[in-house]
Image (cartoon, rainbow, N blue to C red; front, side, top):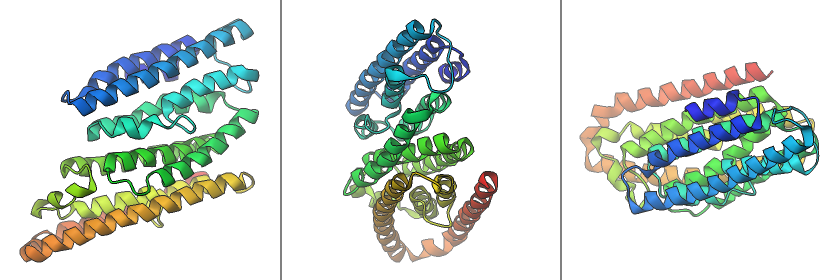
Length: 333
């Protein structure tokens, strides 16, 4: 956390780079977790990718110093290839298209807590820095890449059997929405990222609690104590997909309305990616429902003992989704 705060508050490229490195060395032992072979493999992949991204970013900062005579960050159109070098390092570290290839592979070996950190906290600094320096032609290019990210994230998750890989592609898609929102309307982008973070934490907590990692293990998580978890899982997934009237729809609608005057092709990519994601999320929910009602049929008493919890959970999250919709709409109006 300290490294991220240092990068965000720094006024020069060296400070941003140093904060990114502190954050990297802090998170690598955390990702190692129990020391399993799959976790160590993911840690090595993550370290290599982040190191390359840091070298590219530092190289861009040095070139910027030669060009401007100072390491201090200047907002606006910095011009030429220097912008591209700096942005490329940050895009690689963030996992945005076209440097998204490592996200599903790394996430497939991490614990659910590690997946939360990778999907949320590790994207914070690159998003803030990109949002503060991009403008002009490069900003428009990044918006197009964000739209492609949504489409690739949706198509890439199709027919996946591992939940962490599927949610890794989902993270790629949502990164596209976030960067588009930040560049088109900072308020919409920040709201999107905050609400997305809440949904990810909720979803990954449920999956960790039920020890679910693949579709083949779906049945074992639905014991009698976990009846109410189905509501949380289903609503979290449809919110991430952007189905109205959930909070996820509010997130995407706030970005959508800021792009209506222009970027129609990018909007098409964003919507198509969300529709594909919605399809396979609904397939997952349908599979869970089949298993869930099979368990209830064999344990009919569980339905009555947990009905209040289930109904209350659905009511709370439905109201939260509607409330989030009106809140975000009011902020972005």
